[in-house]
Length: 215
Image 1 (cartoon, rainbow, N blue to C red):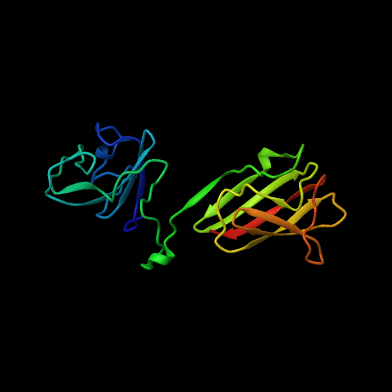
Image 2 (image 1 turned 135 degrees about the vertical axis):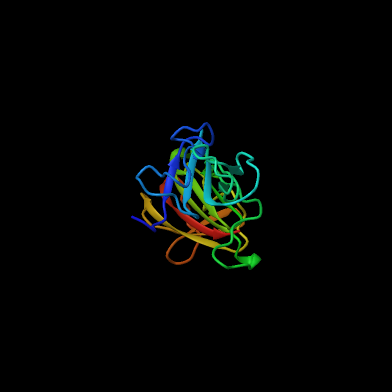
């Protein structure tokens, strides 16, 4: 449709072929209509992505920044790279701010996910490694755990991957203990409590749950 903006997908930058950025110019976009200024081409070349805008320019071709169409070799038109090329992973050295926000305190400067190792489980205590995972977004940490406490485990569990700056809390998803305990984490130690607020001995019991806290 005349006047609409066009986004094209290419798999090469140069070479003049129909699947290359320099294989299209202002006289042909493949459907009988002309390329318009500001139309966009997206190129995925061996996993590296490029976004170009069709515009008027007198600059000399310098791949990948400026690509001249080979078809009509018009010196007054070119595909201009928009920003930098990027691959499948984008690295933001100082963090990410959204929209028009400029406040340093609102910068998302960390995201991480992985496995953690619960400790202090007592003699013979075990944990399900595939279910002991964590996610850290900014200064917020969420831990998931699936452990069976051994003998003499006591009332605590340690090993949190990040230190809590203030006390956090959690909830139990399942336990075979006669009492479902509540949890609070201080620094890297999680303490279990009964409904009366007294520390609760979890020795010999299976407990799964989630812990949330701020670093």
